[in-house]
Amino acid sequence: MTRRLRPGEQELWDRVAKSTDRMDRTTTFLTDGDVTPKEPPAKVKPAPKPGFTIKPFSIGSNPQTAQRTPVLRAPQPPNMDAKAYGKLARGKLRPEARMDLHGMTLSQAQPELVNFVLRSHQAGLRLVLVITGKGEGPGERGPIPYQRGILRRQVPHWLTQAPLGPLILDVVPAAPRHGGNGALYVYLRRNR
Image 1 (cartoon, rainbow, N blue to C red):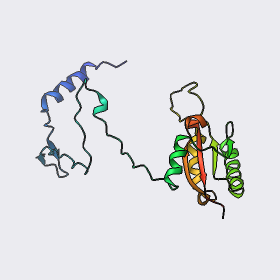
Image 2 (image 1 turned 135 degrees about the horizontal axis):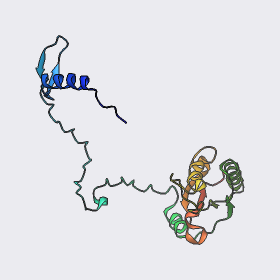
Image 3 (image 1 turned 180 degrees about the vertical axis):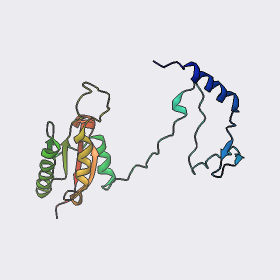
Image 4 (image 1 turned 120 degrees about the vertical axis):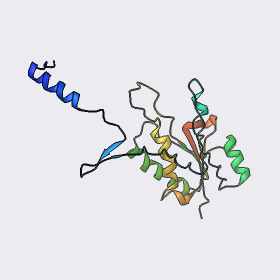
């Protein structure tokens, strides 16, 4: 609730309002009291980054046409024999051992995976199957998005790091009959 001006205050306000002029927005005041007109700043467009263009967007158009296109990485060539890789990718090779990580936490799964791969390599096995699972179902979605399948994302990183990295020739997503996106073929180097 605002207070109304008393008659004396209203009279004073009216006198002040009559004695002032509307201020020009381009005027700046210097420290010594002088008034100088200020030039409006020139609008400068930033230089576009090389290799990046923004497509024009208008209201009602499809937003997917105005978004940046993702940078696609070239697929890396396999580290193993091309013929064996083709059979492996099609699911024609049979894994000699398998490990299921379903229901394990990260702290439980990593040592189990390391021991399994080390034992498999010592035994002279060449192809093993590691089942990570696809992750929890969508369940209850809250306001914060989350990613599914922590093991599915983490296991390939573990397989490239020491002590497992030097023992492994290639890691390939499994064929649908061996688990599809929820499993990985791990092709081991020969035991020498």
